[in-house]
Length: 397
Image 1 (cartoon, rainbow, N blue to C red):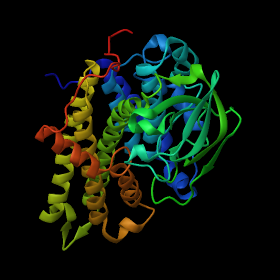
Image 2 (tube, rainbow, N blue to C red):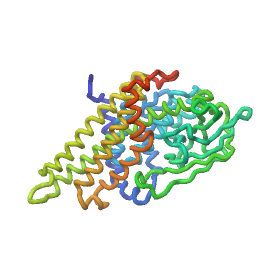
Image 3 (cartoon, rainbow, N blue to C red):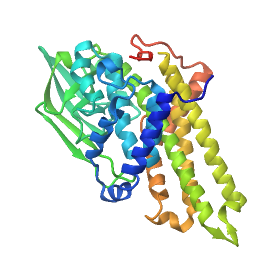
Image 4 (cartoon, helix red, strand yellow):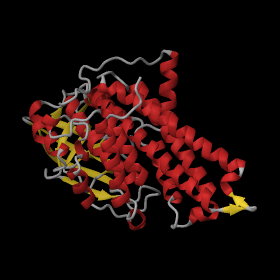
């Protein structure tokens, strides 16, 4: 097992780190305070090839492997969760789902411009009454000739006001429960679509998050992703990709907490010595380092399964659960190390703590992932190949 980065991965890491240090870190405190999402960042991300980093070159991407996506997410979240979230939603939840489930026509029409960063993709699954319980959704899509008529509402949608394309899930046959959900590619310009941002969030304040409303939206049959009734299966496969990026981002947040804490430990003295000399502070630093190293290995293990085209729900769930929990604890410890200064905008740790909470909730709460892991161990849940797997990574494609 080789843990070394390839030359291509190392260049990506250095490029993403420089981008983060030059363009995110100097501005994020202001953006976070103002609750402002800066769309100019999208063009810079696209110019660097980040929007389709793991999408094959024939579909407009950079053709790198799935662990390259993890490297990018770690580096972006080291600056702020906002920009990793944007890449997670656009690439992990939307573009990779099109790569896995889309027809060739759908890939050419929607995936290519998204991979190039010319269009932005988002994901619409959660509803006001349907989060972890996906089957509780109320959105419907009724077949009417060569169209479906979509009605419903989605909430907590990242990039709700920015995205051009949405991957939306709705019931085509509610009597079939999970087997009656269908996925659709919805364009913002279709009549009957509106969005509304959610303001004053606890964390990830610089990100655009909100609600989507669908009122008699007519969607062509050719915009159905997969077959009728495959929506739940597609949603769960999409979450395997999204959770992978969330876990990788959490690794970056742990590293940000560790870097800020080490710096402060060398600056601050109490009782006549640097606070880093105190054993309880050392314990918190050690726990951050352990969390960082363990989480990173779990993420790369899941990424390697993706590279081989192997079902990775179990590995991705474990990586997401553990990395996000470690990040939440690292942020709390970093805040504690900074003491009263943790409350000051002169230091980033308060933002880290706020941002660390959402990932332990979205894309599967820690409770959902706890149950999943127990059921795998107990034999109540088994991992079987899907009829359409995410393509294995092939160098040069």
